[in-house]
Length: 81
Image 1 (tube, rainbow, N blue to C red):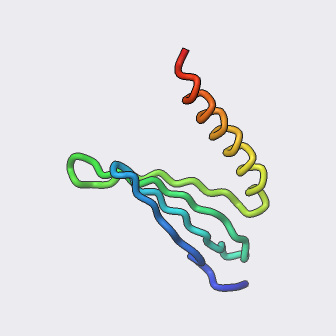
Image 2: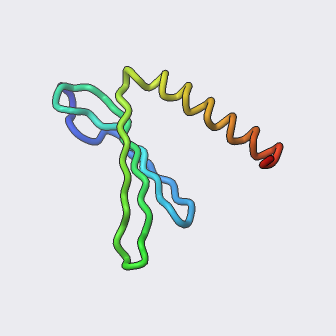
């Protein structure tokens, strides 16, 4: 087993939301991508949503994400019907 826990982390902010992309290692040595969306609430608390994608599922996940983004971009260009 390597260094357990967070191996890599980066974030990006859009104004309303902050997205964190973390590569972590579980206790079995498996790597996974942990994505977190954080949004500040009116009472100054934060609403957080997290999603995990394991390394062995990453290619399939990325293909589905690519298809969804392509659809979104194509649909945006032609306008809502």
